[in-house]
Length: 526
Image (cartoon, rainbow, N blue to C red; front, side, top):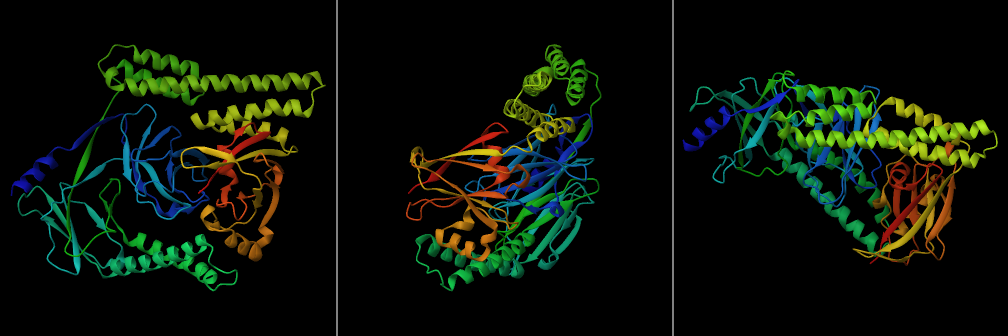
């Protein structure tokens, strides 16, 4: 009774948010899930109509890569959030718009490596949130089932379960409080157990085969190689099936979608939740600070960074009470304006220098390419800060000047000894990959496995270089026919493993100019 009284009080305390419009919330978008070459890492794809998102992962132990990857044909901007394969499989995302204090949060259960799990950020008229209120003595009295119970003030709350689970969903007015609505979900565990057992069995065998490869005990013609190929596809199918059975969706009229993970449900388990509405108070521009922030955002979108900074500066100095709450947001916007203004000036000077060289009529192609390379780098940074199509057009115009020039890449190979670099690594072969299949470093867990792949599809691979005694190798690539990725193959007895990188990711991490890139490859050494 005490517990239900507590729930009743909690449900009366709906979260109140001030906003100029509705609230943006993340909703699962499984139709946009896709495989992507992430070098064995996992990722989240965030789709948004806005180009000013601020994205962070609050529980990551390793650096997280967040980048805007252009705009799709559907008009949505595509943000890639890449989580290191060694990091958590359940990252907690916080997403907000620049200048807006409210953050949409989402705990994501990542799936396969080299896979992007999609979410769509959309404005929601009636946002809701979920709180777990399960206690140790909660139990469901059936050894073949588990149960979920949702208590809410929303009488239109819907619960959608995977059809294969054959779950029973019932709802009605609470017996203890007529103002509350209770939805109960009883889930037979047979199908979920079957999917979990199948995945665990395949995962165990896959690990055993991988260990054989790592130990180098398999002969070139061992039957385990064929089994490995079969197990991989079976494992991926089992993982997909388990993922499809492992969540329940909650939603109501005009609300966002909430996902509840049930992958670890056990017999007799009962979980209780409350579903709370988030009350949106529409905010009108009644303060000078709010009006100036809106003006700053408008000017930033027009690429008028100096004027935008002045507007944010004025907002910071209005002396109104709201300023103390908004100060971190305003200061962040000012810093972004300063960065954009700097890169805008540097890009302008690059164009000026190219125009002057062309006017002289004596400039070499190498001289023009140097300034074009710097200009491209500045514009690409601007596009990351403010993804305006204007910058893409300017980048394209500079790239056209360099299409006939080879892309030069300098690699430096060094040992990585857990926490520090070791000696240069000679004899590392550089191979290009031009296939369309999804591969990563884990695809080549041994040199034998790579040789087997060469035998089966050697037409997709070509050796283009090898590091010298100093661990350095330089290659040239045709810009009009770039490979899918680059593979680094150390000597078989070196104690190091093959490393593969998609070309797009390698270019993103490389330093240097558009004309010549430099990349340091740290190869883990036992």
